[in-house]
Image (cartoon, rainbow, N blue to C red; front, side):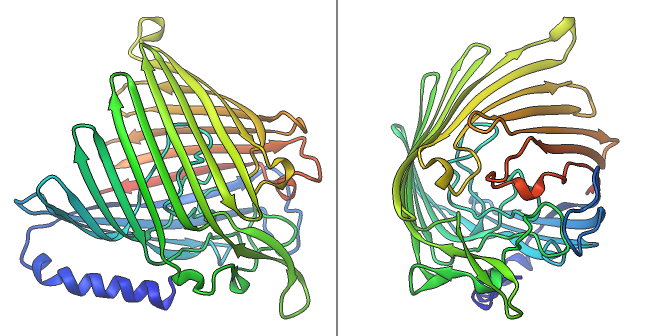
Length: 399
């Protein structure tokens, strides 16, 4: 649940715009979904159950004035049958965008994505990961921010002031997809005395030059990736305690479009968390357009992730190769399929992921996911998930 400070920001922004919104036309959309996760193996740990179901709801309110300025509100809620940590509420977006002459500013709670690669997003540092939603790390929590964007012919410069930090979410005691030792978020620690109230800053430059898309950025503030420290709860049971340290991180994302080829790179250098290190992910995507004389497009994806911290990295990808296929059917139902395999070059551990989706009529959408981890050594950070291969089905109604 949001902290008192986060709720205060929400209430302040709501009061700031409610008079204007109340007399303006509005656009309301969103979705409601039911989800089932079915695990192939019994749970490893006490209190876990084999399968679970959940319900999620995400409405979206949007209004745009004649000036081009706009207001967006996107809350999100999920109720899970087993995991109390996955039963949660978040404000994904709640912000006002003001358009000035050759500049714009967005204030409130927002979401920002940086990056070019498919499997690992190294440079996507603004928003915190909502890990209880999905282990792929794609879902993000809303981030309080003031975002100034200045577009020019020579590129776009963005400045961010991030006045409040969001802690990463973790699976609870009764949830699957966790280690044998749970993460106790109630005992979270910070390197800086201001804790979650520490003000972070970021700046980014991006520009398109011919077939090249280039982004360069710097971030200074609280790391989104906590170091997990060994500790104990009030009953003396062993737990992991998340420790959020201060970092300075600079990086770039690069993409080259060359016919049917996409060449991609994300790289960073980070100072903090006890070390100065370099990490990168590089790869390509080649698309076969109109395969077998049909409307379908087939993309072949290959990427390699590297982190020079090795086993001391706070991520699972230190020396991993990833291969995937993306099928776009280009039919009226917007049918898509993405399948991938990741392979640890050091331990031979590997993971498999399949995601497929299809619209059912004008309002319904069905999504199928399958994930599995195999040949995991005890030293692997995902070792606790060795029996957590699962099949997930979601049916969503969009309005």
